[in-house]
Image (cartoon, rainbow over all chains, first blue to last red; front, side, top):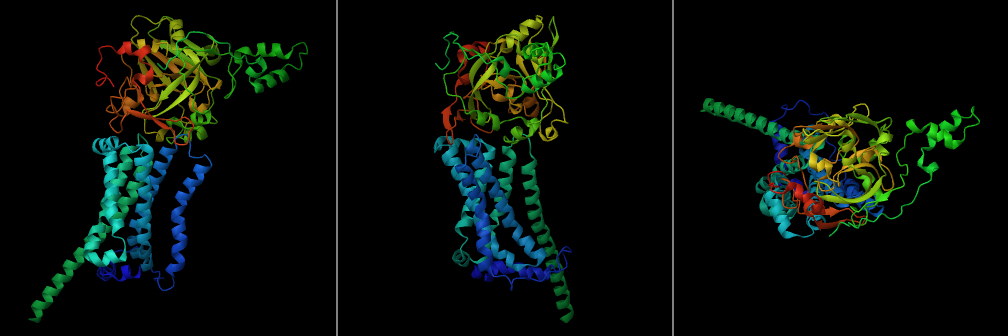
Amino acid sequence: MATAIKSPACTTGWTCENITKGAFRLRSNMKDLSRHINMRWLKPPIFLACLAPLAHLVWMGFHDELGANPVEYITHSTGTWTLVGLCVTLAMTPLRRILKQNWLIRLRRMFGLFAFFYVSLHFTTWVWLYSGFDVHAMIADVYKRPFITAGFTAFVLLTPLAATSTSGMIRRLGGRRWQMLHRLIYISAIAGVIHYYWLVKSDETVPLRFAAVVAVLLGYRAIHYALQRRQQVAAAKRAGRESVFSS
Amino acid sequence: MLIKRTGDIPNSEVTPQSVYMNRRKFLAGVAAATGAATLGARSVSDWLEPARVLAEGTKLGPLVKSPFSADEPPTPSKDVEHYNNYYEFGTDKSDPARNATKFVTSPWSVSVEGEVNKPRNFDIEELRKLVPLEERIYRHRCVEAWSIVVPWIGYSFSVLAKLVDPKPTAKFVAFQSYYDIKQMPLGPRAGIALPYVEGLRIDEAMSPLALLTFGMYGETLPNQDGAPVRMVLPWKYGFKSIKSMVKVRFTQNMPPTTWNIADAHEYGFYSNVNPQVDHPRWSQATERRLDGSFFGKRIKTLMFNGYGDQVASMYNGMDLRKYY
């Protein structure tokens, strides 16, 4: 974990911070608590909390509370928790910047891997319990049903991210390339929300809520990027003018 | 061959009159009659007859067994009572069982009107007693690719239709559900236009399989399953079987139907169960039979849900891909 923090990919956020200083008025005056937070103590309870949805499902299964159609219930539950996991993962960077809490970024990988864990359960439920390993039916579904195409895309895009989540892989890929690759999560989250939106028959409230959250989280990044660009250009211009004067 | 057409009518259990009556009404009647010492409980029940209302979960009987019953084990009643699509009470399948508990189903009447010679307004109790009630075990296939087997209680809709004497101009029958935002506050969030409306071609409505339904599993319908009266059309996807019916209208033209209004591309007027015509978003070739086993079992969907012998002839010469 520590390596991940020190890698150049993860420090770009901090250097950008200087450039965009003052760009976001909503930034808090809280002090960074990174020094005071011991990840060894923080991570285990969060890890267990992330397992709670699965534990709840298992508990319900043993107590015959999954309803008349447990396959449907498990599918919906694991799908919903995947989207929650993706949103939480995507919230780490904006929260870190807004609250000035750099330690938050050290939880990002765990949340991301839990999102992948739940999407794997979701996918397995579809392959095994829903489709009964009927390969032809599954291929037809991915090909013919837009909502499954979207969901399948979201899942496939997440796999390389899970595979390259280790510190070793970050080092091997190099921070910049690793970061480029991991931007796939943006597409995956959008595809995941579309997957949900296209699935529901009429009441679109919940998928629209997820859409709003993802829009805010990605919108923050877009604005952040735009402001950063503007300041970079301004800084470059200033630098250019100065060099003219000095020559 | 899944449909038994033996035609024999085995003896069914006769429920005692005291159980048959709503207990609360019974007690109220007894209290009201305490002044008139000459009246016994039995005559009180007779005296209360016109206003007598059967509460949710009241035993119905005696029941005549039906030759149309499927020879398959019924889905456990708790599943049928807790897994409902009844969007007026919420769009999650567990919502209706929770939100419909206070739904008022009495007094209730069903208006039968339109292209008929004898339009009438039927009180629910009157309607329930038109002819002896039958128990019919039907397969019920949802458009969402799950299915259940339910012992419904009712009689053929044609009995009611004949009573109002449809004119030759009556080509279709339109059905309407009850809708009251005060009782159904989640209605505006259903995402479909309410009140719920459905329709059938007149020959479909007159099919003996089309069941005017008052109960299931030996009792009156639970609110979330469409109390106090609903239609059951076993050869069509479940959404065609309207719940909590208040109006039946015989019409000259094809009536609008709720899901067709919501999305004509996905839900046609006929909506016959057809494994060869997929829903745009999922295959209809198979279904998950909710049979009480842990995950249910995945089985092949049958044309007309296995009721082809009774209904296929109505669609001769029709392109069922076009008329889905």
